[in-house]
Length: 373
Image (cartoon, rainbow, N blue to C red; front, top):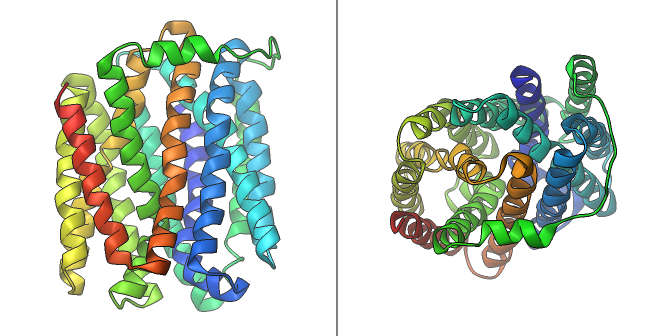
């Protein structure tokens, strides 16, 4: 199950992160502005966010597979739509469908791993989260090939085929069956558990700021490098790959360290490193200095993903892990959805440096809130 769901996550993230290095070309081809592109990406993240809590709670009441398999099937349709996009309407529809499918898959698959791995929960979630970086690396290479030899639409179709294959393998491998039960939601009690103490409330705020920063950075950093730092689109794509190469190693390591030591302490260190590196990225201009800043930034911020999930799951009751994680991640991803819209609007009417400079403040406040604990 760890291998299958991690492979599914890596495949869908390959398709998701294809959008970022291809975004300058997509903007030109579809004749849209950066602000419009940012809003479309916000819709993708918004649709992903709103499904988090229902999918988590239903996976607690029904079975994990009852949500995971439809989620994968919807993702196949969404990436297929990206592959045939000819205008803004189809681009927006594809983004919405991908967000919904990703939301149905993300929480039940994490909850499944939490069911299966208790003593090594952080490590398992770190391996799963490293699928994001494996996907990011693949997407960076695929984007360069697409821009050189094909069209920006071409690589989305193999992603759809890959997800269809994972869906079949999961359906054969899973043993928990399919069952639909009560459709009511207990949002009030779930939220009550999440915000019952000052520590929990500050944790939610800290990781919301973290996810806001991630949403803006990961969607616009190739465009930022191309527009503000003078990189070619291919060089920006290669630089984008550094983020994922570092993250592929850091996430399992951070999850393992979190199992042994303080999850919050490691998160504070990571956020502080990321804040310093983001400030450097805004200030430096040479290619080598930018590569170093991006690598150090990735070293810091990539620690946050398995730690955030594990911290929420540590405080959740045995029968409510999906619901608690889903509600918390819904909040995080609403903040995440605002990130690309923020960058697109600020870059359009002011500058990219101002937009990315604002993320330094987000990281410092997040680190301060966690450090208080």
